Length: 512
Image 1 (cartoon, rainbow, N blue to C red):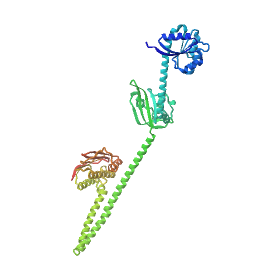
Image 2: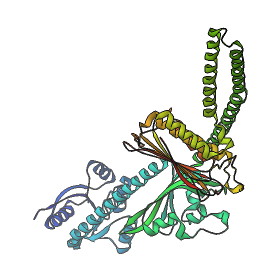
Image 3: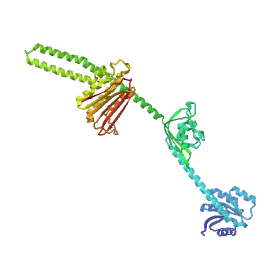
Image 4: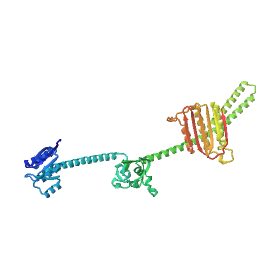
């Protein structure tokens, strides 16, 4: 059998007694390394020079005592079994030494007990060392955890399986205004998460934090609120996760961030976006008014002037008759140029604002627009209408309910105009379908082509504002615009705008 190495410091003044102890230990299976001392100074020197497993001391020595030896051992702070071996110690003295820290005592005439006592004390000492190591590791881990949670830029707290606070980091204390000691083992959910403004508590079944403890599943909320100690509300985003043991949630870890600045930025952004939309709508209205004014002035003033010049040219031509053929021919050429100028002026005025949109309504304006587009591009254009013919600001229908608001009519016309322009520029299409339909108090537009299409997943070009302009127009009227395209199969734009109910008349008209 392999012998166990044992380092023993003997506090004994009789060498023979020391030898008896060593003999007993050798017979008990130990390989002993020992040193004998009989005074305090010698013992202090010996304690510094070697790592001892056990200290065995006689009770009373001429220059020393068990009390003195025990005091020296305590000075070192070492956790070493201290066993008294004596032939003249009473029970009361032995008990007193045990209270001072002695591990056990053995009578010299009963040394057979020494080996079992040493083995037991060695086991107990090993267990204490292991316990201290575990405690040290726990302390270091707790210190590390505190350091990690302290350095986090977000609040963190831990709840037990009953929803009571076990831990709160400094950031959570700063954000909430409470200290960990104030909330320790309190029902945190009811303190910081119950909606007090409603007067009643939120049922626990509706709480995401407590739901984590019940289900074990992670809970995320990007927009929630916590109550601060001062009674103010703090917008937060939070994540709650369960700590599981044997399939059961034993705690919940909640991390949260103060999103007050983000919420304010969102409000500022929404307000800014709304202001931009209002500005865009205002500019659109101003633009339409200006285009209408310019078109009217072109038609009424410049058109009349050109017509007057044409009449004057005819009068000159008739007065000269055949006397001066060169001048007559020149006047005829001038009249032709005036006619061409009048046609160009009418086209420009119609492009700016077709008079029939105001006079005859949306349907007539769209009919004219698609017809002109087909003539100009050579594309096959199919127009499908399911509305009251002539509905618009100038509708001739006697029923007020069939009229379209002027802004709705203008928006619908401009969207058709923009879509047809895009088809002519980019689509490389052969056929275009324009559908105009009123149903369930809504005006629906659909413009579809069979052109090359496009990849809608790619980022929109920075200078491509056509679609964005159409979306803003529709948004300002409370409608929706959906844009779809398949590469090689064409493009479709569908718009729905709320309007008054119209009386439907269905007909199909094709232009080539």
